[in-house]
Image (cartoon, rainbow, N blue to C red; front, top):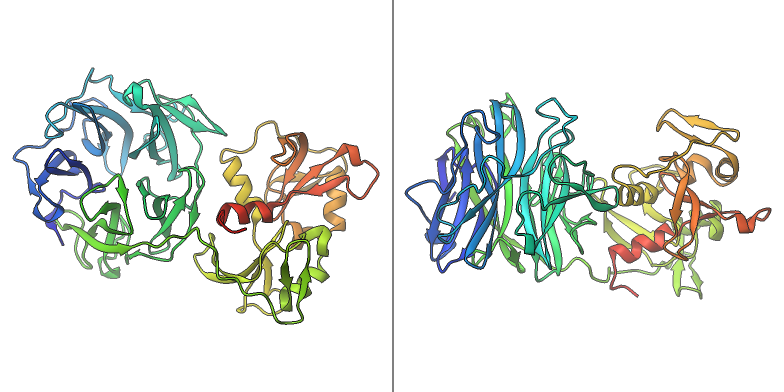
Length: 500
């Protein structure tokens, strides 16, 4: 426990870096600075570095400085702002501030016109109209701001050119599949639904990956991304707790939140293999107000994008010369009984252990061109071999706000109440002839046009939980009129890009 008990820890602790001293920041309505030569010697500054705004303004309830970057003689900062102060009913946004004394005090240029991120005006309810709790990282020529929309608690992202200084009016939100919507009032899409669940993101030089936090039922694990946009969950819990905000049962356990990663030398922008997790704790049995502690724990990270320890099956194995991989045991039985090469494709890996993105549990898996088999020993046959929901993963990744231009089939349509989607025509014929629900899953989109990453051509497609159907009119009248996307091969390359 580094600080407390008090109320100052109400956002993720972060550092500016050496100026030449190290400066760290915490906030609760006002933002406080801490200065020292190392993380272990930080002492509070006499006055807040950033204060809440004027009555009636967008930041009248508070100004939480969540991100800072040095840009020459200027320290640029972005703060979480709140108004309509009736907790938990508040309206949140993100605003810009800057410092000319090395980060020891911040001003709000052009106040009150210094907001950088606001929700679309159509959300009149203050909670639905809240976008904030941000963190900013610098990647190449851009600042990337990860923020949370309170209407669904999903992480979004916006970006601004470094040459524009991250100032108001320069941010574009990611929407659909591009950075195309204005930071002020524009629409936005979740970038990693239910995988990246807090806005803290930093770069890890040992992993050569961006690292963020992924929420489980009672704690946080880690998620990683090669580009800051496409995320996967990679660990079980690194931080656990027994109760959440608003829980009336004080005896349920400790409360923990406001997580961040800081290098051992005090850098919150980049970390190596050894770093600290900083977070807020409220002890079991204690109220939130006045009983917050700032806590840290050591964390050691090893590379995750490495060759998995694969084990070729020795149980009635069949080797495929096309890929050099073996298929045996329960996976071979399932493959042969469920469409074989046409439905599953060639194996592109041998068997190995993998942590599931859905529940954080480890399963024995094998990747195929069009599927991933998971062995579930807790289930009785035939449900001990299950297929990963590759269609769902891919659809959420490519179209977090839903694909544009969808059209409902009127050719012998069947509507699925489970997803509200309609299946008809050639796609319905194929679905019913090739395993139906067990093999393909429910439809999760209607039909729409999509450009294939394989040949660059546009095809009519429809997404299912475990597959993507492509209609190839050039193959009309043949068994290849409807083809399956190679989702298994794609995901294997995405998960393990160094594996041949």
